Amino acid sequence: GENLLPLNGWIIAEHAEKPKETTESGLYIPEVAQKTSDRKFKVVAVHDGYEDCAVGDVIYTEKDCDIPIQIDNSFNIVSEKLFKIETKNILAFER
Image (cartoon, rainbow, N blue to C red; front, side, top):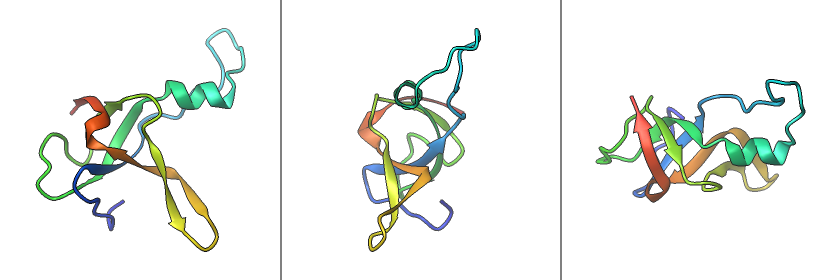
């Protein structure tokens, strides 16, 4: 994320925590439920002039607003680590 500079209205983030694969009692959580329940991200890049959050902040977002960053258009390689999030979808943050 260090070399990425998102455009106005977007930030780049990664999941702040690894989604849980099982419940405390040991039941398996399907991958779809893992993704939709995880709304906590760590900011890795913000656009110039955006002051509501900064690199290193943890943010909480609307459900299903994170878009995986596509690294290479010719092979459709998608990053499993970095996501672009529209700033209007940020609900809260912690520093």
